[in-house]
Length: 434
Ligand code: 4AD
Ligand code: MG
Image (cartoon, rainbow, N blue to C red):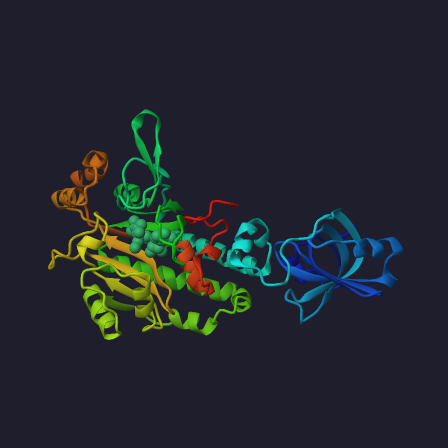
């Protein structure tokens, strides 16, 4: 019996007989020949069954196949330079594992986005979604490898928390037995700061939650964030690390997924240009001036909205760090600017081509009294931060970190119009299923 080989691993089997196990995603037939388009999760291939080379029963069986039938196909691997996998299969045998009796809901014609999202469990099978998920996998893998190689240790953070991580807005709350309220983590950062005091360079990676009412193309209620935190890193070191990580992961995607990017119709040159050279830096103050010049009427002191970020990033080919925002629009834990007490030592990294914020980072307030007054100024419940303040009581140290939203990064790299395609199961205020 011919060995089972995945489509992505056919190259060394050219000219040999193999078995492919997968699904029929398209089919064309004439009286003499069936062209079965088969995918097995690792790739796509055309299996050609000629009437003259199989039995009557087998030819009829192939004719009976519905879209998305699961099959095992035996055949000879033939080179075909026009094919996406580089090969086609000359069919010698076919076993039908399961032949649907219903028409597959997703057809070649254009479907509306709500229909596709309602069928996300099936939509994931499409070629386009495979390209996106493969790039997402690469982004995550590259970040992990990068951080590991830089001496960062993975220290997982909890999802159920008792202390508010970012701010009182946008919290998912639930009742937690006799202990009152628990929250779904908005960030793992506070726990990482404690871990940084223990192990120096650490990171966490997991789902985070924001009960945000924002209905923009950039917001999910559940998203995945990779968060490094480093002891004795200052604001500048923090930005250098972000730049190195983002450049690294974009280069990894360019190296391994050029075909996927092309299939997604991503402007690959623009992406390559984005990491070819140092990132830009501007301060919040400069950014507001630039926005005013571009016709925006944003008041000084306000946080940037999506439109402001879009306008800003269209001015740059490479990602741009916006540094030192006003304290009052940022989270309580950020370190006060040494010369301007109205500002904090933070950065947002904005991706070019209108994508906007993919990273938020900062140096952390390491002064116990300043941190405590910030917690009070933000009206946060002081009692629940006693453990967090201990980090400042026992050997306080300068430290910095950042969080990169995986979906934001993937949406930019893939050139997606909306972040919902960058996650397998998007959660928005309107969607909990599938
Ligand atoms: O800027 P944020 O809120 O920063 C933090 O959570 C810090 N505690 C991170 C840290 O310093 N360790 O969020 C960080 C990133 C954003 O830049 C964005 O990429 C992503 O998380 N993000 C979202 N992605 C999708 N949907 C949302 N609603 C998001 N909110 C933030
Ligand atoms: Mg932010």
